[in-house]
Image 1 (cartoon, one colour):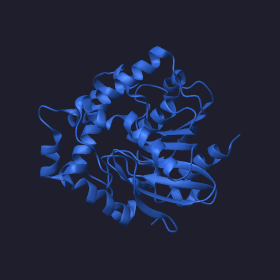
Image 2: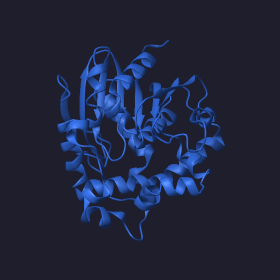
Image 3: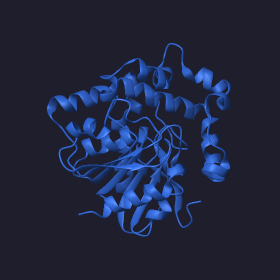
Length: 288
């Protein structure tokens, strides 16, 4: 897995990030989502490595990256904090500018990186993600029923950690190792059986419904938008279109070029359709 890549832990200030990197060329960061780790990219990263320096970190609180102590408003798990980690990591690796790709919760981190650091991000790719504000302003019975894990994981009075840690295999159902790769499967489950990681993932969702929403609302009120070219990869067997056309929903948030590509897979695109994902990302990063 990740043949030719380097695996290390990097101190970026408030946290230490486990990261894998390799390849040569223009730099790109691949940011995983919930409940994965950086190893979800093991079939995509090598396909990009001939033309790009590819960086795959575990987000703070996920995998084997650390998470600071809880802060008021769950600020330690804000996407703004995670975006800062990405920028610090890339500077440590010698890159002041880079493109960023994010899936699921990682799409929110990638989006926040482009919003907060417009002079750093060259190109943005979001995979099966929308701004949190757009979800919350479209709440209806269908969304609450099918995305109920958002509210469960974000609870604080009756923390989800107690339920998940009592039987992680009952809560999380992942495809088998023959489908996602043995090493990737083992890494996912090592994380899911770690109570510290479960807490970190729950804090991600708690921040999402609180401080992340505040940050997005402030951006919109100030007229801030993503300035770099942006690509949306939408899985055809997922429900990112639950609120309607996702490109239409993204349009007010992106000042410049915005395009979309369908990926013929379920939600975990990088594991289920790595060739399509790598091809779409590669073509977008090469575009001028």
